[in-house]
Image 1 (cartoon, rainbow, N blue to C red):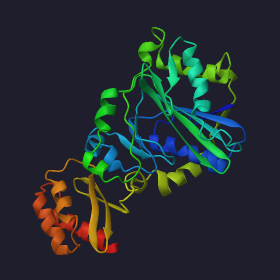
Image 2: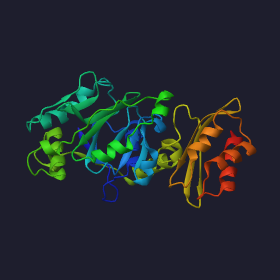
Image 3: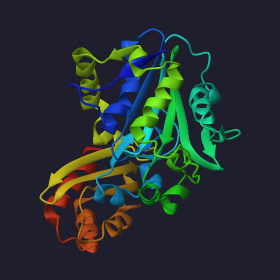
Length: 339
């Protein structure tokens, strides 16, 4: 097994959209032989499964207000919160898919390392969650591409649990629409209070890596360092798909179209579906605080055929003061007309 170093110009990568897309690059493009391990940290972010509806899973207003990034995986699974108190480990195999679906196999080295410290961690029966005292400290996911596998999960050291609860507040109306895969919510716990007194996050990281690689020093770990060529290809993937709001916010089951535009107050996105000329689903995604009620606009348009007159009537009902109403009407009219 070897470690995959995803630092860039000597600096660690904390960008969740970058880090979450690299597994796909290693499995489908670079295809290094053997068993690789990514081990990294993301800045505050919500990671949702490829086939999830963000509007059902996340308080998007809270997300924007607190500069939390939304990242859509290339794999399945439920919605989770990451921040600088949380590790992510991911196994990369390109030529052996025999253990696909066996979460216990990939969780084993982490569990053994923690059990060696006397911590009673285990795998939740019939689940991909790792638990302590009945609470989840790791949620795992994996995907398969040909003979390639990416499989891993979180390791909560000192996650901001309050932030996690608030940003992962479910929208019950959206949940009832049953659009996409729903998350299974579980109480969560940090490992920090169970570790030996005074074990810092850096010390915990070093301990885990030495145990997982069965070495006495981090210097003994075989490491692959990403090259400029690797980053060039990864950047291209991000620019085309994984780093775009269209992928992360717009790729929602049941919401087939996405468009955004920059207004004086900030960026505004819309996610919608029109069937037989009528609006079926519609969600506004302002990246700024709106003075008005966009929900009122949504509710008026849903079920109606789109026209310039209808759109203007809907906007008027929203009493929106910090967006130019004519500019918003033009944006909606043009977006819906193109579809």
